[in-house]
Image: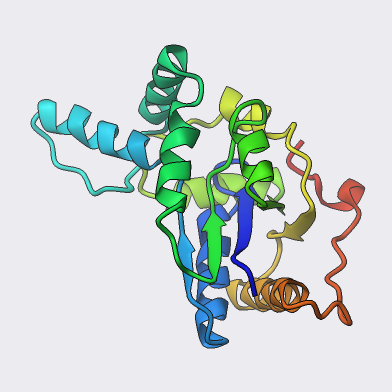
Amino acid sequence: MSQMRLAIVAPSGSGKSTTAGFIEMRCRQLGKSARILKLADPLYRLQQQFYATAGQHIETYQQNQKLLEDIAMHLRSICPTSIVDDFVKRLSECVEDVIVNDDLRDPDVDLPVLRRLGFKILRVSADAGSIAARLDQRQDLQTQRTSTVDQTAMRIRPDHVLVNCGTSLQNYAADVFAFTDTLLQEASGDTSRPFVSPPLRQVELWR
């Protein structure tokens, strides 16, 4: 099996990281190596430097969403491909069977590169109430309730859709596991049980 590559797109609070974690877990259960590879790694590194300069320590993946979006904007103003170039360099060093990206948001620069690299796109869909509840439960440094970056990400058309609302975490994990099983079957050349995404009109509840 060649390296399977999947990128997850959704607004903040939809469950991108949770989904990626379940995919990684399922792959390992099935004897496949997997890695979650973030586009935003350089943004998180720079965010830590901002806080360190201000005399504060933060963990690597804590989120000040406004600061992260501002850093991304300024990096892209210097070099539009700076973020995805860093991602491609790190991807070239990955030897795992499955690579999952859980923070694709840019449809104009990053998406075409990931498509050329063989990434399939998974949209995680959740209703506004579920998103708000999850954001309230997170301990972000700062949360963007209305984000232009999230709005831009809605232009990305997915290959697959998973719905993450109105269900228990256990049931959602089962959905993700089934989806992962099908992707691995397809990657191995077995298409006897293809995963069928729900119609978009039924799942685009966050629009």
